[in-house]
Length: 127
Image (cartoon, rainbow, N blue to C red; front, side, top):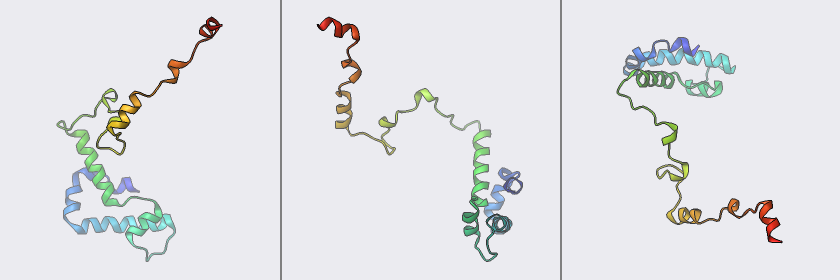
């Protein structure tokens, strides 16, 4: 039902945002659908019906579709970085994962167990 309500959303998204009556009409329709999905009482609010039905509010869906349309059809939009240029999670400074300088030095000096493993030929030469 959401695709039917959001058909052409990038075109009329601004009109729905400016006039509250348009948004209320869409919310009313979605609320009735959510009540049927969640098998809830008719006295439930719009927000609660969205939570109970597990459906995002229609206003958010419309904004998302309009934003995706603008990103896809806007030639001035920044292109995503290729995977090879993505920063490693430990090198991100503004994300959640950031190592302190002491920790980074400690990891660089950490012994590598692969260097210490002796092959069977080396073990035979020791005897």
